[in-house]
Length: 90
Image (cartoon, rainbow, N blue to C red; front, side, top):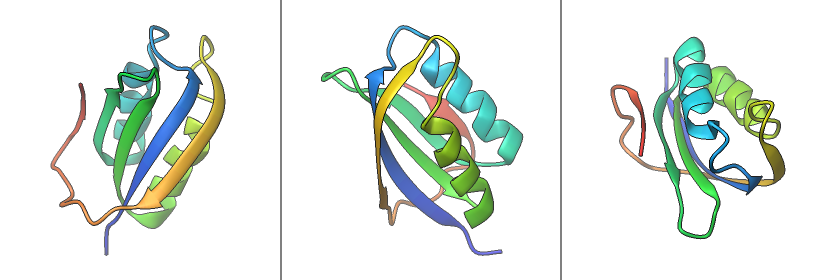
C-alpha cells in the first residue's frame, strides 16, 4: 500500500492541553507515523504518514483535538517527507 504524508499546522488553544499526546495516541490507533511538535507561535505542527484513509481520519481528528483544546484552524499540505517508523512528540 502506498503511503501518503501531510504536514499540518494546528492553531488555537493547542499547547498545554495534551494535544500532542492525544495526537500520538490517535495516530498509533490509526497506524499513522510522524510527529507532533509545539511551535514558538503557539501552534502545533503535525506530520502524518500512512495510508490515505488513516491520514485523512487523523486530519479530521485534528480539527477537534482533545476535550481541553480549542482548535481554530487546521492548514494541511502534502509533504514529501520520508515516512518515519513511529509517531513521536517534540
